[in-house]
Image 1: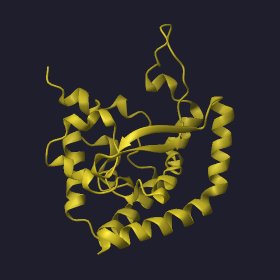
Image 2 (image 1 turned 90 degrees about the horizontal axis):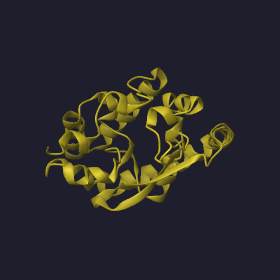
Image 3 (image 1 turned 45 degrees about the horizontal axis):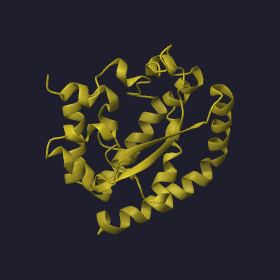
Length: 204
């Protein structure tokens, strides 16, 4: 009952309330990024959602669009701005995803929506992560986030789906709040410590 009805009900009520409460912060951050990065303060990207249906995730844009002499975007580490780095460290970049939750593309708690290009590289067991809505935070995020190896990170996602419950979600919310307050396991540039999933699993 919780998984099929009440979870979505709670998602909508909590996300809507949180967005209204955080709207002043939302506006201030958007203006700061608009001025600081001199570009659109929002980042949109297709991600696989429930049943691998694509949706556009929305986050605050923490990188500029600097390109090399050939017109290619520079590596993330070179495009991450100072204000963008601060916004990532404080997890403020996640606030716009409340709109994804309100719309129904995402949940507050669930496996993080990863890149579309990763879809061919999941095992059959790991694909279970797409049987529920992706979340703003999840079991993998409070167990190391980007500091955890891919195999373990995806195993945490499968464990969450197989044990999804109201009490489990409350536990994750509580631990997420603690980690945000302490700024634990937040890696501003994930590519600096780990490979992309497709690069790691691609056969030579």
